Length: 340
Image (tube, rainbow, N blue to C red; front, side):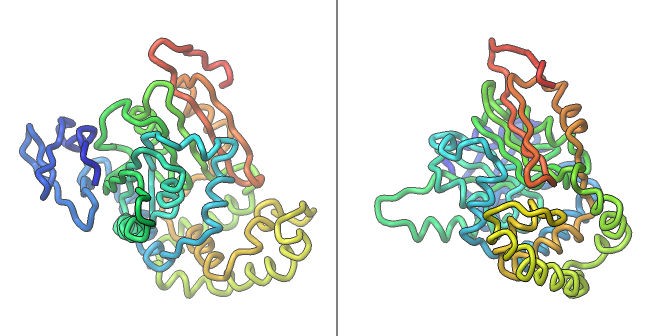
């Protein structure tokens, strides 16, 4: 665990917490917070809504079923945050908003940041902490992993001090927060002046068939179905998609190496090499959450405008998602938000 925990704040009174090697104690209100399996549990924020609880429960169950972490996840992560260079994580203090089972946490650790602080509200965070601990035990002699802290908490009410992190990234999570704007504001708050924020979110553009056909089914039915049963119910859809990938999209695109005129091909070509288990995971992840927003470029820009980033870029990734890179103004830096 990290030696310096001064950045942690009580989720109730917002004052510093003290670590006594057993639990976290608030210096003002006297509340204590447990540490279980290497995870600091600060998940008592009043901002946690019923919709959030349902989404968290569904994803927590999903990550227990699909707890695999594979080499292709590393490549996928680099594509999601491009053009941000992964080498820029080196020696940085990094915050991960929504770590799930820890696949991005392990990926980031290979780029040698000085510290990683990962937050998730679901029980999957215990899987992430376990996988990180196992990875550290397997490191060659003389090789050290970055300091890593896992916090169970709400991204809309982070128990973390202002302006602490060099880089904040949130991949595939902001669109599952019932108030994305609040989650964004919190992650911006904890970012240092001059720091970089990296986001990857579902796009409304290019996903019309999901928004109009699949999403109503998710809202009315599949998000209310326990994940273990949903996986069985979705098996025909998963099997059909897997067949299309292996029989049509993969061969026609050279397994993702060239463009094709097929519908939704930018994305489907890219996942054509994935095994059945990963396709199963993707289908369930789209059907299980109580909260899922498909954000337009205009909506994203509107959320960022009050934050007045020094730089702001969006990239339409695979024609179905948005990668967002933004820089927080420095102490005496420009407040120009002209690009928005």
